[in-house]
Amino acid sequence: MSFIKALSRKPAAQRFGCWVIAQAIRLAGSTGRLNVKGGEKVEALLREGKPFTVALWHGRLMLLPLAWQRSDSLSLLISFHSDGRILSRTLSHFGIGTISGSSSKGGSEARQAMERTLADGRCVGITPDGPRGPRMRAKAGLVRIAAATGTPILPLGISTGAGKELRSWDRFLVSLPFGPLAVVWGEPIHVPPDPDPATVETFRKQVEDAMSEATREADRLCGRTTPEPEPPAQTLPPGDEETAEGAE
Image (cartoon, rainbow, N blue to C red; front, side, top):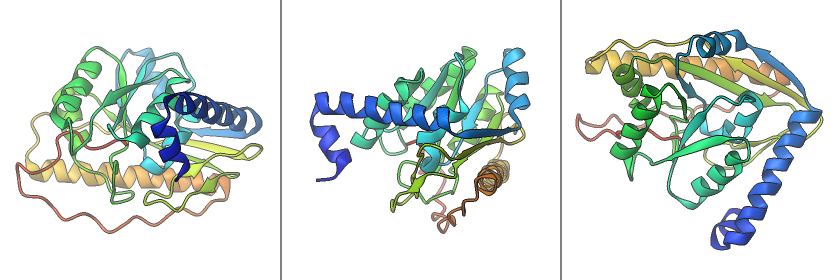
């Protein structure tokens, strides 16, 4: 039985295990040398009271507290399954909230919740290659949410030089203490209202490229090799696309 499955089946063990993971993330953050690039873009939007969507790859999800070290509210889209519950409970130790849903279950409700959160002036987070991949390929849901709410997307790359990359579909990266840490924010991406399918695809690709560029730069700063993206998923017919592309 895997560690994740063990935690998911025993609530008390899950609470304790998630607390331990959170302390390990804090230890990595307090002992590592943090290099932040582009942080002024985040600060400018927050000063102006403008909410935005943070877009990072699923494999870097557990490093998010290293980038979001603030009291400002952030709610992350997390799927319903056991791994999602563990991620949600772990990130809650850092004040990061959860919107439950995925492309396969609760998608429309999750999308509506994200739009309400942004309309209320709070930021949201999405891992647009989750919950099952393909790795480092963005789905289009975050573009539609940005268009509907008039809020920008901020690509985020996070890396560590002392981490361990797991042999999972997303090459999940776990941070270890005493290593260099890098946070790279890309330029805000503004999606026009009511985009047609071609425009959605143009911005989806722009977001995907910007996320990969930020991740490669963060990895370069930490002396790490960036995983190769998986082949793109087959394009679905109109009406069959996921409604709230995944962040877990």
